[in-house]
Length: 153
Image 1 (cartoon, one colour):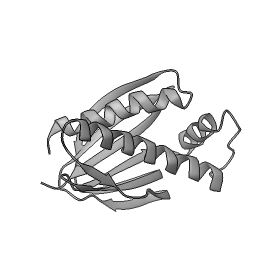
Image 2 (tube, one colour; image 1 turned 135 degrees about the vertical axis):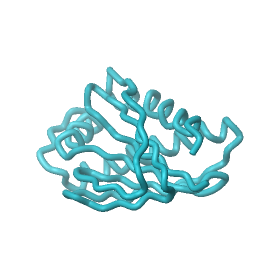
Image 3 (cartoon, helix red, strand yellow; image 1 turned 30 degrees about the vertical axis):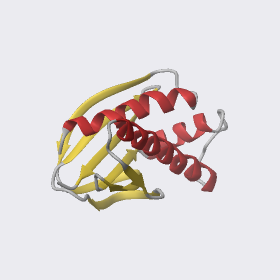
Image 4 (tube, one colour; image 1 turned 180 degrees about the vertical axis):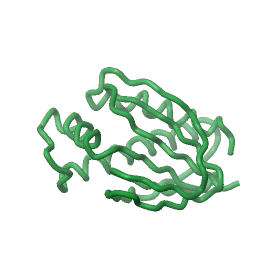
């Protein structure tokens, strides 16, 4: 996997999150994970097809997912991940991935994205599309979002 494939996702996060009301947006660390993941919290999967094929997964623990949904809904309190909060989080992943797709297009790499699939729970097993998965830590108002990027070689 080419580490340059991370940049459109970083740029997307840095551009989209301030538009949604997050004032302090920054990147954290970059790491590598295996194909088999055990996740907890809110897990949003988006498929990628085109010149690159694979998927991206956004991981947010439940309390932080509520904070993100609240910020997206103009500060409305979010006590539980109801349909409205889940819809906001799915739309966030859609906006982030679509903006990354535009970044790829600007590099001459054409991709399309699937409709997001949102899962939540403890110890959810996820198998990514490639054996090497790039893990990107991003922060919005000190709320961590882990972005897992997996492209087939």
